[in-house]
Length: 383
Image (cartoon, rainbow, N blue to C red; front, side, top):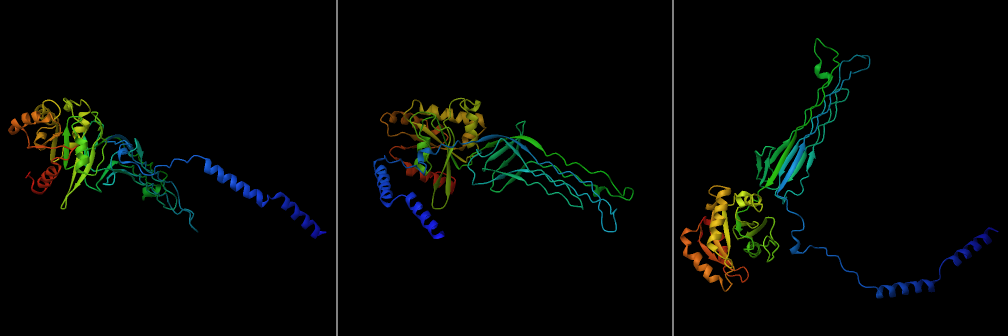
């Protein structure tokens, strides 16, 4: 009977399973449907060069930082074998963690800085003279050139070197346990300290792009195109003015040294009064040892462009126009640019630097400009 029941169950299982012919039909149907279905578009895994501005560039941040609270001390008494009154044994609380700003060359901007940061609190003390664990420090990586200002606008620190640290908010000290208060007059202290509160400070972080060369000029003068021609940086280029809304830094590699070039958004008249976000742009080139004025020969009054740019630089910081080492007269390929070039060369003695005619579109004198940069940073003078 057992054998018969097993055979009947196997026959029932064979009837439930699909036949091989039906399985083959299903495979053919699925393959035919896959052949007739439209192809799916492939997802782009690598971002194109023109999408470099997808992630916003943050050069300023408001930061509320709070240090960790210290742990409370413990009121406890030891009870040992054959000595139930062994004296106080309350441990101290751990110290709270600090909020620390750390300069790192691997960070590009301040976009990763959260608006509020709190370090870890210290643990409370325990019995048997066990002290609490200290809170961990909260490390925030910032790029070189980051300035730290307090609530009143006073400069507290400027982080420039890789690995440089600044304690933005200190953690509170841990409270003492009752074992700390043991004395000859008080053999059983019944008190302990609370942990101190951590320091709470509102700070303002501002980034100064640290570059060797700064490109300044009016909007739509060709600064971004010039940076693309000099380096591998790929800022967005468009015929409309104010295309560049954030600084871009490219590196020009020479056999003996590397020169960083910063493309600053276009300046307008009144930039020193913060018109057109002038302060946000001018502070990036405040410490550039070499400034290049990019002039549009296709526009009217090229000499007035140079004078206005130098005035804006001097109004923002006295003597800043002395950093202008070269006048790059761009768009020399235009047919009507010769008359503007003649007017500019007539006043060459009053200009802050020599005039070099270039054309980013055709590549005219780009190699000469590279020779200028190499000679300046090798010999501190233009050849």
